[in-house]
Image 1: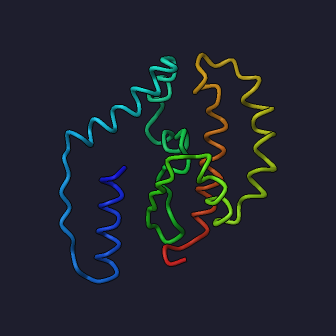
Image 2: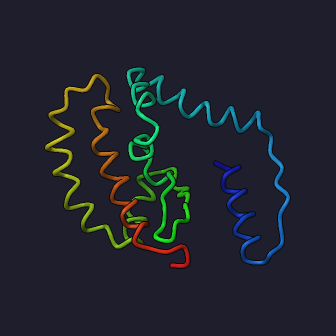
Length: 149
């Protein structure tokens, strides 16, 4: 997370000023941070490993932290959201995209029709339709904007 944030800030600075930045990082610490996130998650629900076995092209829309995912703008530029705490960042993200009302009016329907009746083997797979819906709404909102907007 911190490495990505630092790299993003460096690229943003270079875009604005034309001046590059030096980025130093300890890859061991980065690897440990990335590994601990998934290890902790799967320690709670080992059956959730099934989500990793999805086709690569479908994996982005199944991301269980939609406010910490990559999305493509109308002009083809990819944007990385860094809101790791969904509860804290989801409402503001949806409001900024003008998708808050649409999201909160449709989410209960997704939960009632797809999540609750699901017979999936793990909690993460059972909630998969909800994650897909969340990512789809954010993706559609960002796809309506250009990088400059």
